[in-house]
Each structure stands twice: as structure tokens, then as C-alpha cells.
Length: 365
Image 1: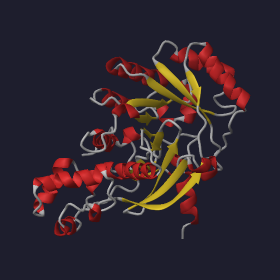
Image 2: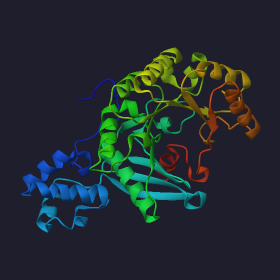
Image 3: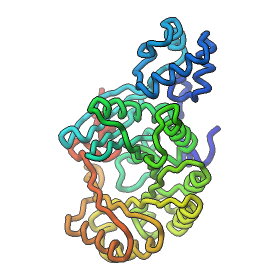
Image 4: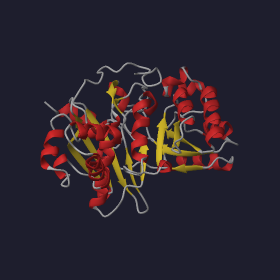
């Protein structure tokens, strides 16, 4: 059942009823499904091993299952809900952006980033976005529909395969791709639980970061969950007047309400919250704004990630000069607020969320 927390704005294209996918089912549901086709319970354990540990690409890869059983389950269960449309590389192959097509023809983006000490995948949770942040390419087209947990998992599985192809393992996951996770909360939590399940990927919750633009009911719900994931909040402005223009949902949950929810979250979970701050020239980057931000956050167990704005052709914002970026960070740290400047990768492959999808749609017949 859809709740108000899941969808605050109705998608234009509600998900159609499609053939079920393996990744959308729990382990118990997989066992029930195989039993319906004559498979014994141990066959479900074998299937799970192939899907999650060996990263099988299809039922045909599950070689310990009888061929007749593999063929039978494939008649009413799709293995992978996404098809790779194309991908691009940047940073000498250390940044890979993938464009997938869903079974109902939607386009979804994922970014995989290789660092010396970690491998991170940035996952999308919706096709488009309803939040409409003024500086974000994804929101320009609005929200088409939510992704299922299986469609999110498929992005991670492909990223894991790509990492293993380079003798690496996926170590970190951020939900900072297309969409607002807390406007698709039920599927987001289902997705995280599947990743965290030790019998599946066994992906540590503390290596998962969920980012929100400030959906307060979602923050409250996450605080009540027994999941030790990281929370990042896209703030981008220290006051309501400015944030109203940059992040429209601020009019529903203004800064003071948002900060109260974050404080309650930190008190209940004991976990630090990251503040995401897209720095835009002449908009939210002057010294007075930095001081106001420092005053808002000082004394709270937080860390600010300053993200210099990535230029987008259709948007009127610019990146500040390097000296201005450094000065903004210095003001925060001088006021006792930890801050790090994080430059985004892959500008030449349309690294901003939604750019690759928009370009592909523009040139497709």
C-alpha cells in the first residue's frame, strides 16, 4: 500500500504490473516460487547463492539447479529488471556512468566510482524527481515513477560485477542518484534490507548512505528503523528565504523543522549526519552565508560536504572560483564546523544526475 510518506507528489507514470523479478522477492518468496515449480527448499538456497554471491546474470547461470527447473521458473519470473542502454567512462576509467532501460521503457542512471581505498556506487531510486531543486537536472522533467527495490538492487549487482572485473569489491553505496529516497520509502528500506542481509550481499549498513532533500517524515521513519545506515541531508542554504528558492519542499518543512528532526535522529541513533551543500557562485557562497551556516550547525554532531556546483547547460548557476570555495570551507572550520570540499567526478560524461538520461532521450528516435 502506498503511504503519504512514500509519494508526496503522484508520479506521472505509476508502475505497471509487470512480470515479477528475482531481486524484488525475499528469500522466503524465492523458496515458495521454486517449490511451486517442484523445487526442493535446498534449491532456493542454491539459487540465492548464485544470485547474490556469484552475481549470476540469468537463471541459465545457476548450473546446480536442474535445467527443467531453471526453464520453469523463467516462465513467470524475470531475473534482471534493467537492461544496459549504454555507458561512459571518465577519469581514465575510474568513473563509469551507466544508463539503463527498465522493462516499461524508462531510463535510469547509475554512477560507479573507483578510488584507491574504496569503490562507490551512486544509485537512483526514482525515474525523475518531484522535489524540483532549482539547481538539479533530474527534476527538470518531473517525476515519472518510483523504482522498485529490485530495480535498485540491479544497479548494485551490475556495479559489483564491474568492480570484480577489476579485481576490486564494491565497498560503499550512496543513494544520491535520481530521485528522493524518502518519497519512495518502502522500496528504499526493502532495498537496504536485501543488501544488508548476510545471506545475500551482506553489505554493511554503515557503508550505505541515504540522502534526502529534507523529507522530515522520512527522517523520523529512518530513526525508528534498526538499520545503522548513514544519513545525508541536502541543505544548500542556512535560512528559509534562500532555501525556499533552492529546495521548494522547504516551504513544507522549513529549516527549523528540518533541524529539529535531524537533532532527534542523532539523539535516537547516536549517529553523525552529513550535510550536503552545493556551492553556487553569487547564490549561497558569500562570507555572510558561510557564517550563518556555521552558526546554524555549530555544536551539532555534523560534517559538511561542500560540493562545488557542476555546470548544467539548462540551468543558470555557476561554480565559484577555487579561492572562494576554499574561503567558504575555511570559515566553517574556523567556526568549529568540520567541512570538506568534494569535487564531483566525470563532468565530461554528464555526471550531474539526469544529464545522461536527458541527452539520450533528446537524440533517441
